[in-house]
Amino acid sequence: MRYSIIGSGFSGLSAAAYLSKKGYKVDVYEKNSTLGGRARKLKYKGYTFDMGPSWYWMPDVFENFFNDFDHKPDDFYNLIKLNPGFDIIFKDFNKISLSSNWDEVLNLFESYEKGASKKLIEFINEAEFKYNFGIKKLVHEPGVSIKELFKPEIFKNIFKLQIFSSYRKHVRKFFKNHYLRSILEFPVLFLGSTPQETPALYSLMAYSGLKQGTFYPIGGFNKVVEGMVKVCKENGVKFYKNFNVKKLNISDNLVKSIESDSKKINIDLLLCSNDYQFVDQQLLPKKYSNYSKKYWESRVMSPSCLIFYIGVSKKLKKLNHHNLFFDEDIDNHAHEIYKSKKWPSRPLFYASATSVTDKSTAPPGKENIFILMPISPGLKDNDKIRNKYFKLIISRLEKYCNEDINSYIEFNKSYCVKDFIDDYNSYKGNAYGLANTLLQTANLKPKIFNRKIKNLFYTGQLTVPGPGVPPSIISGKVVSEYLLKKVNKK
Ligand SMILES: Cc1cc2nc3c(=O)[nH]c(=O)nc-3n(C[C@H](O)[C@H](O)[C@H](O)COP(=O)(O)OP(=O)(O)OC[C@H]3O[C@@H](n4cnc5c(N)ncnc54)[C@H](O)[C@@H]3O)c2cc1C
Image 1: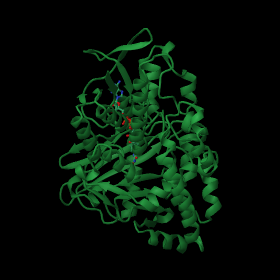
Image 2 (image 1 turned 135 degrees about the vertical axis):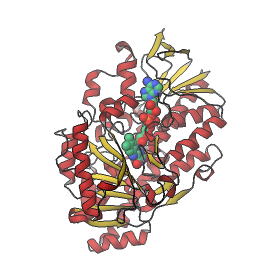
Image 3 (image 1 turned 60 degrees about the vertical axis):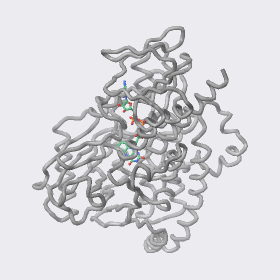
Image 4 (image 1 turned 120 degrees about the vertical axis):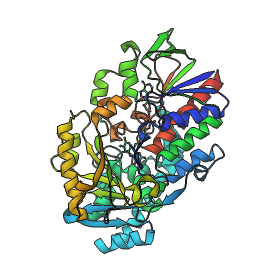
């Protein structure tokens, strides 16, 4: 049996590693010229930018992955804990730094609301339970049968996991202060949804961010990709770059071969780790799709983003490694992403300067800045719009940093909806896949198998367990375990 995988993002790499470890031959076909999917790297005259993920949370998931192959993250990269983990900049540039020291976080909470440190301990204890249970048990279910939720251990804890209640209500039960609520609410924005519509289960993200801490692999996030590729190669995985799969040839309810413009490859089993919607609606003839056009149109996708990769020829005094600009109204921006679906009037944004921590990512005396502004997926983007927001954001950065930045910019590349579609075949240009809303969690996500084609399967951020690097790594493991069980049954 030979396994063919489309896509070399975290889910594809993870699946390739697990399947090859069992002695199977694995081939990975990647449309781009570099590996890593949304976590590719961009280099320009001494600057190195991570094009996608930059927040390294849930370090145990990375550790577990490498341990499964008798490695540790250390074998591939030097992981450091950031202190502060991140800065949040509120109205009037009122900054709160989140320390990597738990006692300092408790003191910070207490300083904003009397009794909040005690409540935070209670909140985080609950979140730690959800994290441990969620990461060790729940996310490893393949979501193929409702029976999974009735397994005694899961069913017994289902109410403690708070899958069916809203995260916002949960936070508001504990805290009154606006700043504290925002600190706890912001991590779910990574899950591509509003705090109102995200299950309270996801307080587990707050546990990871506030208690475990925020980490950084020296050299950048792409180091994780490099490590995973090495693990795959050690197990014999073969990579085929610049292989854009444009056609699946199907007969007798089996995919027989895949085709790019210039090559046709016969296959035994196909695992698609590229965007699910693209396979379902564009690669497959309609009669083999798992879902209808209407189904996809009704899904809540995670936001797309307008990103700027900027090289600045001086050091900036005030910017930290991770800076969240929450100096505008968060609900208003969320409404424009999810409800009115228009370009934001007063956007929040995120700025990362890895060069604050890591000299290797910018030339000496210079700063590499990554700006991300979340937007509604599917918006029309063009240079005029990108330039408008570039000016707006740089001017806000200048005001916050209290220094000229614009005249020191020596590199600036933007990335938006159109690029996500061109580079990754991303549905509506989404950045992080399918949002983790109440109705799109666990078994309610698109299934990992094709209902009509017996040798076609799916993994990645549009299926279980969901968006983000750690879930994508787990997704690759979940689907490979499912496949191995199926193959061994035969
Ligand atoms: C800007 C941005 C910031 C993010 N920040 C964070 C963060 O800080 N922390 C975090 O944990 N997560 C973050 N994420 C989310 C995280 O990066 C993703 O959830 C994860 O990388 C998805 O992995 P994947 O394997 O599902 O998909 P992908 O990475 O998209 O991999 C799919 C691969 O399939 C390839 N492909 C597509 N079509 C074809 C085809 N027809 N033929 C061949 N190959 C094809 C694509 O080129 C791609 O390489 C971020 C994402 C983005 C975009």
